[in-house]
Image 1 (spheres, rainbow, N blue to C red):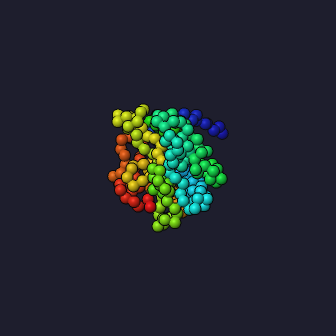
Image 2: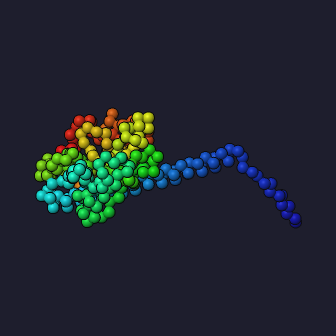
Image 3: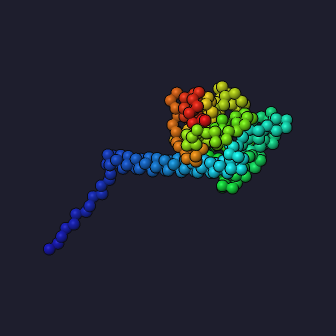
Length: 254
């Protein structure tokens, strides 16, 4: 008995099936890309938190050698030379921003930072942004200091014994500023720059970790904050700079 085999006729995909496959691939691509983006943001925030904790250790060592006092925010030398907590300006006063030289090793915190480990600039700050405005030659810092602790502009730094609560007073945090008043920035061309203080009035907290900012407190713990409602500077799209408290509030300050 012969068995007759009928040839299989080739069958192509229907348009509907092709659309389903393309849709599934597109969904998977979005999920993979979104997952990687979330992972990268989490890793960047974790690295920033590590930097801040290193700063906490450095300040604790500094205070131990200086009768419990915090490092000065700024000191003025001969001819108005400025020494910041993160380094000493070596170019003459009046040098344009972006052309200033900074000797990081001459800052009051440097020996202690060197003792606790390397602290890098925050990777959450987009230094490749075409609208990044340099303050010194290249990236210099990007973490702002609670300038009340550091004596503000040339005053005496506070002593740790003066604090009402080490766990409720911020020490450093993610900072930046929208600049419209110094070249190459202008009112028509707002730019983002590093900034070095957190105070009770200015909008200087930079929410660069997926809309949140990392804030270090004197006792060494780090908290993540969203912007306080109504305080965000809206002059530069894509950068969230504002406050974690209402303007004029001394909460977390001293």
